Image (cartoon, rainbow, N blue to C red; front, side, top):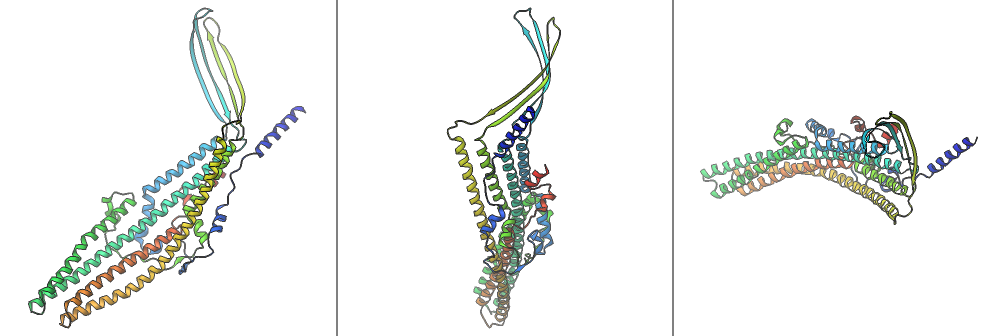
Length: 484
């Protein structure tokens, strides 16, 4: 009866100690933090459509762009390095979790020692083997909180990986848009070169018949050569973008021909409407917001780890084995070795080190909470700005299209009038300049419109989803904890 009472008392003591386990510092969960900060609706009014921002590059209607982004996400070295960092964080969780369990080791040894003191000289030989176990019970939860901090670090690493994927998809699509813009710009220069070459030939023919002057010929030649001087620079811009895309793909620049991008194509036209999503949902979907919140969780757990240093730490050591000893002239003796020890340490005086560590941990947690708020504010600004750019870009493309039609008509009309002698060559030069300027402006507007759409999808966190973690073998830290 007495032994039962003692066991019950010991169990009650352990439960009482376990109830004293330190908890992480309290903080709002991510949905609550988002709801507190996010507005109910966007301030910029834009046409909306009920489409997903995931795999947004499909919505440009360009199969080559789609294949390019997909191949880059598969082969990019930055993505692969970020994935390795996730694995490193997961291994850290395993290491911290191992501290919660006992450690068992096998040991063996043999020795020979010469005895030089009486009784008579000789050798003592010993050999033995055994097992040793040690365990530091996590009575006050410090090691458990270290595991939680490591799991939060895994979540942060996964968010960083998705940020890399998100940025890479956007940068690749932007490089593709810039390539098509440069190719279109080169085509505009080629077309205008032909227009100005015909104008130069026209002035030379009219000079031959005495209907024009050397001044008109010089002006036409000057216009043509100024235009031709821009062509090499634009050819270099095309090559730069193709080399950049090759590097994004994990290839060397000289292998760019394998991407089949040399054939010029029009700039892809994005959707005119923004995805229909609430500000709070957009924030919850952004990887940088998730990474910032994971840091808050990590810092909150580290506060608990610091507080657990105030309490005693216990350690249990067990050992058992066989030892065989022999002495010259005597039979071999075999002993069974068993030992058990329980030790405890508790801080008494540390000159304020533990308190300072707790204060520093709490300060780091508050800093991470402020960082989360700043990340969400910056995200909302990016989305609002990109929505505005998408709307204004679409309107600009439409209006510049009408301006180009008008300048093209003016160029044809001024050329015909000059042929008939009804106007001078200055009108033709002015019409040529206007046509080139409007062509380049429209090409630039199409580029900016497409880049605004890319930036909007990126700011909405488009380009990844949780199913990708399952496909790549990565699971959220909480899921991994439950699985184990």
